[in-house]
Amino acid sequence: MSVDLALSRLLSFPEDPLEEVDAAITEAVRGAPREVRGEVDAYYATVAGWDSMARQQAYVDAFDFDRRASLHLTAHTHGDRRERGQRLIALKALMREAGLDYESDELPDHLAVLLELRALAPEAGRTALADLRPAIEIIRARLHDMKSPYRFVMDAVAATMPRLSRADRTTAERLAAEGPPGEMVGLEPFAPPEVMPAMEVGR
Image (cartoon, rainbow, N blue to C red; front, side, top):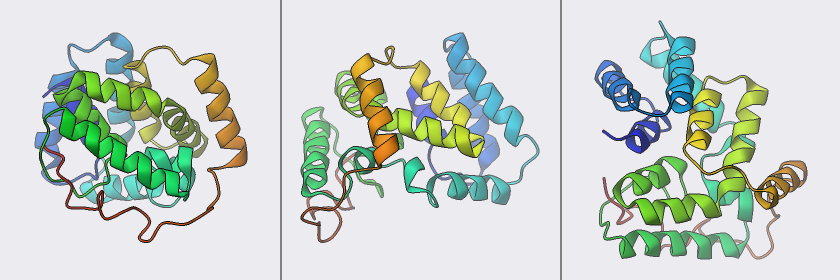
């Protein structure tokens, strides 16, 4: 397992057997840069002794009950506008161009999916994540406000990316203050059928 796959697993809903997953993640980050390894260690130190139900609840509390912490990155940058559907279609096309052909229960803008993309097709994954960097910063800030254990995982993700540019920081601050763009046209369903599961994005 690569570091990107390890972070992808940490940002996926915790499933049993957690012991096997945790062991694979710990091994994967052993050779990662110190900052990445330190953040993952901090996450595990926080959840030490938690059973699977407690960790699942922490995941739901972090990502399902607060739109500011949603792992669907284009929800932060595009809101409910039709442009979001177009962005999702573009992400799916990027995955196809990278030669990936597999199914996923998540939309293609989910951070765990994009980390997996970067693991399997580094150039495409780096491009997708760089374009959505402001959303990553919004999620990081919200998780720190919530004092969620997942703040450490998001910090680890940020540590694998280039230094935040001034333009991305400005965009993130604006979106954090104003919220995502409001609905202009609407999407029915909220994403076009071209990108709804089952997606041809692979594991």
